[in-house]
Length: 369
Image 1 (cartoon, rainbow, N blue to C red):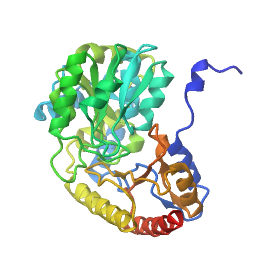
Image 2 (spheres, rainbow, N blue to C red):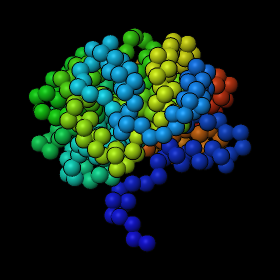
Image 3 (cartoon, rainbow, N blue to C red):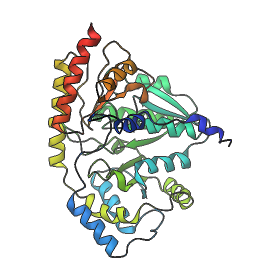
Image 4 (tube, rainbow, N blue to C red):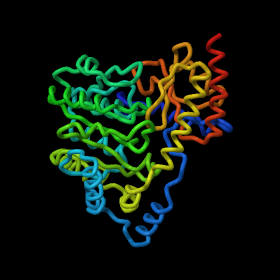
């Protein structure tokens, strides 16, 4: 069989490779996957069960059920984020795919702060557009100089992700305003991925999308109320884009899962305070463990990831050694043009994190010698 040429532009996710490896290792220390380790809240489950028993098991309107679309509209009105319309998608990954399909042509360039969530680069390349990394090392924050250096007349889109994966960086209001001024001066579109919004540990969340005139804002409930397998996300943005995404959805996903949409009517109101405080304690635990062991690492302000530098400078080699010790982490070159860092997900139990720290302490000594 001869596959489409575009298949050469995509490979198995490095994160998924580690995920699959976990099934083959006895009692692994799994700090690799961005999967919330608490269950879906009972009231959200109950809403789904009620929907199933109530017969709400069929196709919905392509762009989502009216009640949920109105809840999402209100969600952004309260946050003073500009939008014209909203769209319910099959997860934020499905949302990204539809945005890119509707917006990008082959040859278009997309500015992506480096390091970045792996799916951005994969989907952009798959559609024949070009990923242009924006250097944010060593502190993972945006600068006008780096944005200017990456921009060309072919640039069509800038992607922002705050709180960020894999770095855990949270953009300041000054950064967001600067990025907005830059985008406006260049006449480019902006996509703000805010899926980790509930998890900011040092200050209140500052939505990057608030500072743009016509942002494309993506969010959902996978990370907040742990609905990763329910495939439910949304997009708020210009009406022209939402109409285009709706047209594409008719011939692809058809609609987001009906049961997940009904459950989201409850999940969107869930109080995340307890989970946020729990993750903050775990963030402090892994950060203190890494710094005590001598790792060079920036303290993340949000999400549930930390992105230390690998001792010796070769993250792939370091991760191989970690896996040999049953510690599952992800090399930085999965998320970056560089191979200097590695990602830890601390969405894990305290016991697992402490086991991971023991291995990391051992490896720090091994790679220092």
